[in-house]
Length: 355
Ligand SMILES: NC(=O)c1ccc[n+]([C@@H]2O[C@H](COP(=O)([O-])OP(=O)(O)OC[C@H]3O[C@@H](n4cnc5c(N)ncnc54)[C@H](O)[C@@H]3O)[C@@H](O)[C@H]2O)c1
Image: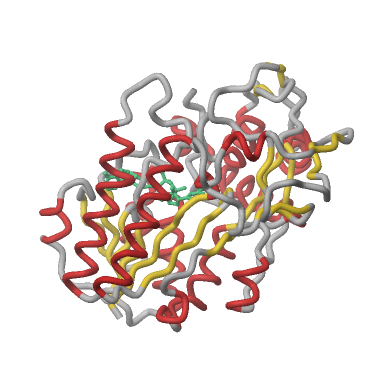
């Protein structure tokens, strides 16, 4: 088995590469990355120590992919992963990497008859639809009302039936466009593929920053004693996300890779689900517990363009099709991240304290 992981020095890519190699020591695993993300360079020695090949390369350049050997499976983890990319600046890097890069990866897979795994995003769902749902509010979080008008929403979260029409950020649009291309390649060229629309993923080696990787950002700010802000939706920190530990994502991929044909043409919402959801205010309390520190948290009531009040995955479809359910609680994920930051505090300081 030869596995190519694009974006393989990133948070998700490096963790998947290492877990894959640990579970399949005979497999050849190659990680390609242009190290665009600050901190990804710290993952390169981790990859090499596990016998994973690292290639400095760029998915925007077809020749970088063509220079690689063949692979049986391509797991596409490269991206500009921030939903806020392109706001107030050029969308060029985002679109060239997330959309054209995905096209280049698809072409690599088509020519080699490789299986294709794509990490899409919950951000394919439109912002206005989400922010205009019926919510209740308790002391620490917004809560989805059971009564909702759009199809695909209940108190359990969002299913694949939620309509995707409407503005959803350029990040989400590039993901949706890539999903559509994958499905066309499946029909037209028989590409065997998996599309997982992931909610928030976290775990050790996530180089969290203000616009992406909130769990690692929150833990790091507590660890290094730096201030935080609740931004948007009134500034009370009641916005909610569900959290998927990267270990649980790996477990799902292992199941899906056993029979990719079965998943070809499907789209799955994949995330922590309602049981593994957390608001920022609740996250602050958990971070205090696992870092032993409190930091000042200011409040910014105005909501940033592109932000959403709440996202919770309804995993019903993926669970029914694969038997998979996530296992790590939010507390376990935060604890794992806190232990990682603590253990590598000096090495990570420069990356994790960036603004
Ligand atoms: N982390 C999450 O919460 C989350 C949620 C849903 C989907 N995803 C998706 O999962 C994938 C992995 O995300 P992540 O959290 O590991 O992000 P990450 O930023 O840690 O990893 C992405 C990697 O891609 C690399 N990269 C960027 N541009 C590249 C290019 N042009 N050529 C080659 N490599 C390039 C970066 O250097 C980085 O190492 C992305 O597709 C992301 O959109 C992530």
